[in-house]
Amino acid sequence: MDVPLVNLGPTDSGSLQLKDSVGNTPEEPQVRLASALAELADLKARYMQLEKSADVDKKYVEQTHEAIHREHLAAERAAANREVALSELARQAESLRALSAAHKYVCDEYLAMQKKVLEQAKAYDRVQDELCAAKRTILDERARHLNELERATRDSDILTAKLHAAKRDLGGVRAQITCAFCDGEGFATHTYPCMHVTCLDCSQAWNKAQESNYKDAVARTGNEHLDPKPWYKCLICRKRTGVLREAIAVPALMALAEHASSCYLFASQCHLRSLHATVSPVSSPKSLCPFGIQPW
Image (cartoon, rainbow, N blue to C red):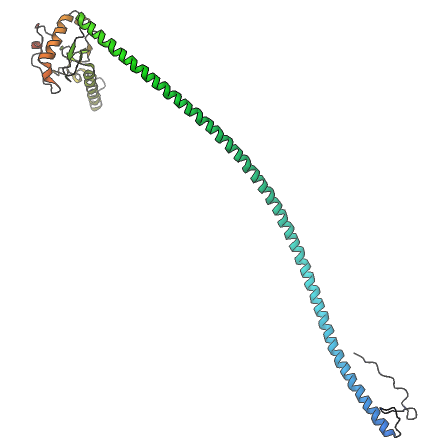
């Protein structure tokens, strides 16, 4: 840094006048020269200090410029970051608005679904009430029908007893006997060609068992045309008799109604009762008939 020189005026000896600190002009030139040299040295020292100060100031200025430049760069980076942050904030705001719209849509759908669920619950309650009412109606109808059936059964039992009493009075074929197989008292409903009498339940059970045996034999032999007669036997004498016949449905036995009735009663009272469940073959079915008539 250049420091301007101080104009000291003419330097000739005639015009150079130095003054002391009090303002008195010395008379000797040596004193004046020494004073001027001292002042010049002082000025040089000041000049050197000013140069040093200028160098320091220049360094400070350069550092200041660098600092300002760095601050400008930092400000530019901050502005760029601010722009990025603003764009990111705008994007997040847009996302937030989209999320708000989606949340509103979900809330609306949830409320609509809740309304539907409430309506369905009300409809379900109505259906449950109707179902309970229908169940009560069905139970009431069932109880009423059971009562009617019970009354009808009692009336039927009474009428059946009266009918059987009337048939016994008339001496019909359906006489009351003891079943030759189960020893239960009832009315003779089925008979075999060998004239042995059983009740309907025993006959049906026996025939089901024989039919099962017949089917097993068919499956075992593979012969679908197997003769079924060997698989159907009398409950009492175990003779092969084929399919059961109802006594009333057989015209040939209708002509022997009186004999059949007496034979059934005699057989049930005298001999067939002792054959209960543990039946053994009867050697001579002829002896069962009090009239000595061969049954086949």
